[in-house]
Image (tube, rainbow, N blue to C red):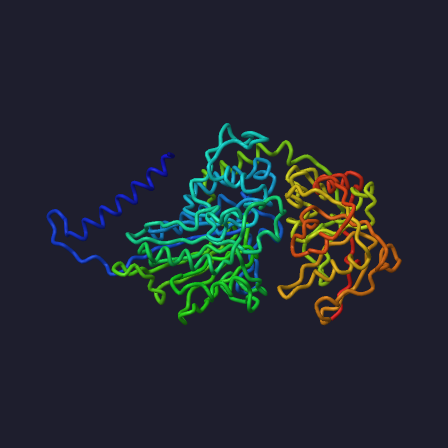
Length: 569
């Protein structure tokens, strides 16, 4: 048992003894005093950190304020400083994560299987962590290793001589084993703060299998979020835990606005869950969509409760100040508030965290700083109005080039797999403008997906493109050079695509075409079930290797014009 785990146990025991002493009036040399009727407890969360120990760059390192200005934000050492300030303001403070702390991480964390990020979370005394989809990037067994410790079964301990694992529980009330239905993760944690118990329920998105590779979650079932939260809430109620919050790895989309605006798309999944779960739940922290908002949801009893999300990459901290009645242990909602606070970089960085970040940077540097290519301008993942991005087009071109030997005629890639920009002058190695390093390329393609080439008919290809639109929204695939089409936003779902051509010739619905995609899409990821109908599947290189090979063969990459996809109203 680690030292601070012992300290936590002693703190809980001390709280219980103090409560008992107060209840019996056991004081020495002073008249008994009535305790205050309420106690204040602060809950602080962050979400979708994705191993961003160093300050994120480009648009990923900025936060839009209420007046439309942007401010640089994020970085673990600054996050730690802001966390300490928030703790100092309210002694009864607890810290949690709302998922995706690891996975799709920069190279200085990912090279070491995110062990540096887990060490950082431990140093910040995180008390509970709901699993996100990226906690499953390397499968359930690797998630268990991050929890319990031990060296990686293939790579060993590369960051430090040993790895002790997480000091906090990974939560997932709706995650069970398919065989028998037993819980695969703890559904909740109870933390005593200010003399009152706080129940923290964790639930992840039910459609998690749609956004990870099938082998990563084989043998697991992800149930309905509301049902799992309500079941767990009832259990906490039976235990006498009245103050309850949810860590929900699911989120709404937002249309701009500052950190504490609520410009979310109506009917989003997080809002729906926050409105439907048991009235016993007092607040919902959300995640997954990388948006910033502070909203109020109305529970089934007609009472308001906060729904909040803090963007991503450690740029915001979500703060919930609860007032709890000491007698009933219920949250006094009208006296409780929620907000997001910007993790600005105008504060003194925490020295201990800065040392950890520097250790990870230094150990990764020989690999991360190696130059792998050059570009003549910014290669950005931000899409044009059509949904096409310059960086997405380059990646699709790279994947087509890497799979030509399997007969590939075109390549399609998911925008969610393009994780970072390649700014023109961002090289940490200092080689000069336009130099792309391995670390930067890794940040763009961190998943290690393998390429697969399949045969689809022209009709099946068109059907796949139609799956870019669903009642939940739009998800435009990035396409390789030579493929062109247009779509109508006003046309009904299933009938949006027209003018589909390949290398200038119309795509024949009956003809076969060789299509290259990553294994995530090949398994039907992101709802693209049409890819599972592909035949004559041939394996290919890892997606990152495809990008590295393309950069080596094409020095001074020119950002492509967004002219492959045309959007009409």
